[in-house]
Length: 171
Image (cartoon, rainbow, N blue to C red; front, side, top):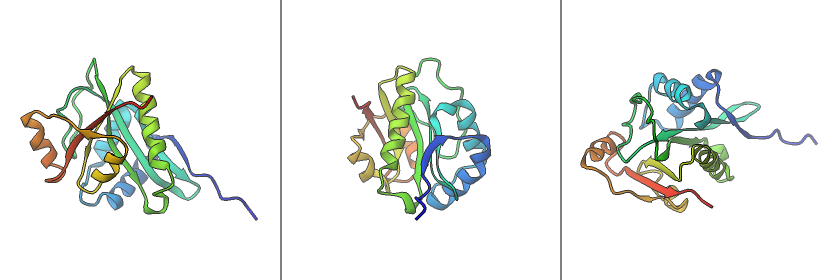
């Protein structure tokens, strides 16, 4: 019997962008983002962009980058220049196909984000959670942030129940 081929997290490359966007369109149909958004995130923070790959293609991805404060990027928008003095690591998106959910790959991706944050000497992870993922992120130890009024408009670009969540890095 031939062993199953491994499913691994690896650094995202420009060659992965089309497949990443296809996966995003399938998993996050309610939250579409342009190819330019994915391309820019990879260009400005390659250390925070990873794909979960098996021999048949991509089954997940993580897009993350340094950030400052609690005014986050709106859905489907390009980033302004990254902050010179970030105070947190922002998880823009973590997506897994149904076939690999529940196997620990999400926790592995969070660990990759933590490693990128530590490399920049940042002590917090931050993200915007959509209504569909709130329970998952709460289980990972993320909690709601106190947000400025302008953040309410940004959260609404995702969905009416979206929340800004953060947590300190795990020890």
